[in-house]
Image 1 (cartoon, helix red, strand yellow):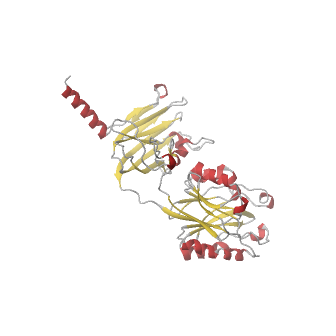
Image 2 (cartoon, one colour):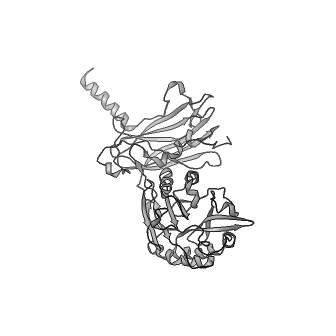
Image 3 (cartoon, one colour):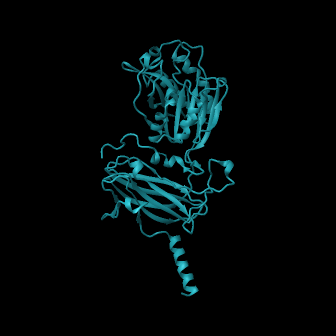
Length: 440
C-alpha cells in the first residue's frame, strides 16, 4: 500500500474519531458478565439481566467536543426490578484527546499545593432527579471540557441487578453557555442569650446580630439550638411552643425586614409531644419548614422529648437546604440522609459537639455545614463556623456577638486529585445498607 493511501486512511480514521461515534455500542467489562442488549421500537436503549449475580454492561457513544467550552448533558432512565437504581443504573462521561486517551485536568483541584504536578481527569457522574409518574428519571449536568479534550465518551451503565431491566432515552450532549453560578452568603451567629427569663426576651437579644449579618449581605443566618430555653431557667415544657408560634412570628418579622432566611433552634410543642427542632423561616417571614431532631442525648429523651423520624430538605432561592440539631452530628446517618435527599447546605444549631465530626460530616457528604454554638472558643470544642466540601473551616466566629460569614458558589465543582468530583459519584458508590426501591 502506498504512503499516500496510508496517509488517507490515517486522516479518515482521525476525522471519524473527531466526529465521534455515530451509533451506540454495547459493551461489558468481560464477556462472562455481559447482559442482554436491545433497542425497542421507539429507539430506547435497553439492557436486561438474567438471574445471575454480578452482570454488568453499558451502552457507549463518543460525542465531539472542543476543549475549554461548556456542555450540557441530558438523559432519561426507567428501571424495572432494580433494588438500588442509584447504584445500578447511572451515567459516566470521560474526556478524551484526539488519540482516544484520557486528558490532563486543567480545571481547579482541591490540592492546590500540588497544582504543579499533572493530574488525569476522572469520570464525571451526571446528577439524577426523582422519577416522574411514568417512572422516568431525568439526568442532567453542565461541564466545562478540559482544555485538551476532543471527545466526551458517554457510557450508560447497568450492573448488579439480577432480573432487572433499564431503558435509556433522549441522551444528548450539547454545547451551552457557561453557568453564571449560584452564589450564597451563609452566616452563623456566635452568641449566648443571658439575663432573660422568657423566650420572648431571648429572641429579642438576637435581633441586633441578625441585623449585623444582614448588613454583610447574608442570604442565610443560622442561630443556635433551643435559643428560647437557654439561660432562662425554664423547663423544657415551659419553653416549648407551637411552630408556627410566637418565636417564629418574631423571627419572621426580621426575615421579612432584611430579606433573608433564618434557621432558629427551638423546643416545639405539638399536642402531647415536645420536639427539639430547627425551623427554617423564609424571606417572606413564613415558616418554610422544620426538622425535628432525630438523635436525642441524655437530658432530652429522659425529660420526655420525642425524636423526629424524617429528613426533610427544602428548596430555597439559592439551593437545597437541610437541617440537623446538635447530637445529630455525632452520628453519620443524619447528615448522610439529608445529603441523599439533595441537601447542598446543612444548617446546624448545636449546643456542643466535636468539631472533628463537623469536618467529617462536611467532607464525607460534600455539603457546606453552617453551625451556631454556645461553646466558647477557649474550650477547643464546638465552633460557630462554616465548613466547606473538603472539611476545611472557611469562616469561624471567635468572639461573642461575632458573625461567621462566607460566600460560596453552589455550582462550583470540588475536584480531588485521584478522585475527581466526589460529590457527583458519592451516591452511586455508597454502600447499599437497606433495600432502596422495595416497590419494584
